[in-house]
Figure 1 (tube, rainbow, N blue to C red):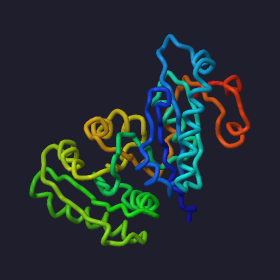
Figure 2: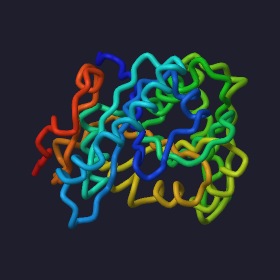
Figure 3: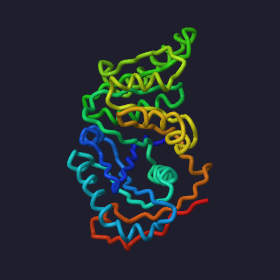
Amino acid sequence: MAAPRDHRVLIPVDVLGGESVPTTVIDAFASVPIVLLGYRELPDQTGTDHARDQYGARARAGLEKLHTAFEDAGCLDVTSRLVFTHDRLQTFERIAVEASCDAVLLLNPAPVLESVLVAIRGEVNLDHIAMHLETLLAGTELTVTFFHVVADETDRERGTELLDAAVDALADTGVDRDRIDSSLMVDGSPTTAILDATRDYDLLVVGESRPSIRRFIFRDRAKTLAKGTVNPVLVIRGEYLEADNTELTVDDTELPIDDDAGRDGATADETESPDNES
C-alpha cells in the first residue's frame, strides 16, 4: 500500500503585480503543506535574466513576507519558489509536478472564509478529494457542502447517490458529519449553476478530471469558474503526475529562495539555469 500523500497546495502569487494572499486564506490553509510560487509573467521581448536582475530583490522580499505570514499562522511546511517566465501556465504545471502538489489555489479576495462549496462532477477521485478536504479542514471550523448538477429529473437519483458517496467518503476520513452537507441542482448549464451557488459560500473546490492541469485548470471549466466567482478556487488534481506523458517547454528563470538559499542572503545573480523540458 502506497504511503499517504501530504496534500500539498501550490499557491501562485504575482508578487510584482500587487497580488497577495488574504489573511483568511493563510489562516485556513495553515494546516496544509504549502508551496508559494512567486511569479512574474514577462512580455516576449523582455529577457528573464534582465527581469531577474532588475526586479529579483523586490520580488524576493515580497515573497518572503508571505512565507513568514504562513509560518506565523502555524504552517509547519511552507516553501517558496520565485520565477520570471514567459508562460505562467506552463511554469505553474512544471512547479506543481516537481513539488508533487495535489492542488492549485487560484486566488481571489476572501474577506470571510467559513464555508466551502465542493463541486462534484463524477465519481472520479472522490476518495482523493475527501482526503485532501480532511487535511484542509483540520484545525478549522470550516463547513463543507458537496454540490452536483444534473441535466434533468431522470438523473436525480444518480446524482443523489453520487452526493451520498461524497459525504460518506469525507466522513470516513474522520470529519464530523455535522460539518458536511450536500445539494443537488437540476440545470442544463452546470457552470452557471455552480457560479450561482458560490454566492452563498466562501471557497470553491473543484476536482480535476483530465490528465493535464494546464488544460483543465486554466483552459477549461475551472478557468471560467475562477473568472466568474469572487471567491478563491481550489483545484484538486488527480492522483497522478502527468510529467511522463505531457510535453513541457518552459521558458523561465527561477531564483533560489527556498530553505537555506533564500535565508542566507542569496542574491538575484545566483540564478539557476532556465528549466527547459521537451
